[in-house]
Image 1 (cartoon, rainbow, N blue to C red):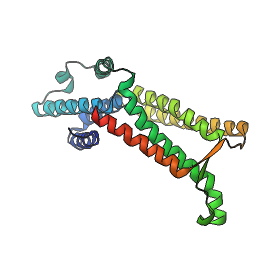
Image 2 (tube, one colour):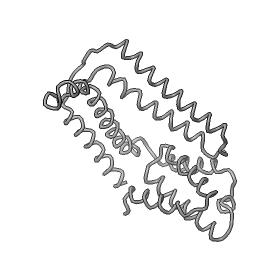
Image 3 (cartoon, rainbow, N blue to C red):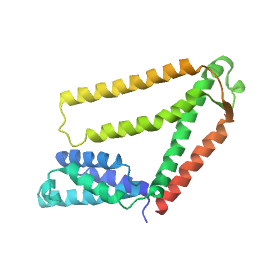
Image 4 (cartoon, one colour):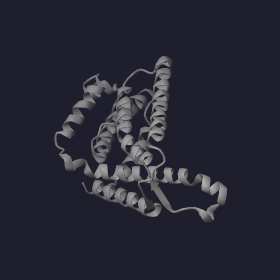
Length: 226
């Protein structure tokens, strides 16, 4: 069985051969499906089938709507998503959540460790650096806010698919992303001011990163075995 990562690489390379118009359409389908909370492998296998259809349509000189039998690509994708999700249960997506959780732990822990030790590094150099990560209310808040913020961003990106691009829509998209970023920063600042600098507990950063990497590979193994 081909690994999921190989499927993604193969798909990205093959999609470059599409015409400019079909490339935009296929890009929207790719983004929409990847943001739809279905299994990664199901998504990539479906996209590979779609890409084969796109390439065949171009060879035969017919439009993609003719090939699919509909001009409503969003509805077509929604029906595919519903079909996949109808066969899922809670355990079906656990491996995806485990893998994503591992990535989240590694990224947030590393960034916070660098932030917490930056001033110490500037003042005293590498020799006096601590290998402990301080788990304070700010770090806990980051873990709690990261998931809903990521979900909101995914819904926003999905909503923007299958729309004809325009200067106005590009400007609107920029300002929405900018406002969301400013809002997130303001929430972080307010929470830090309210929570103070208290430390709940400390853990060795190597252990924290090991746990994150371990969860990622466990989730990745389970994804490939499905």
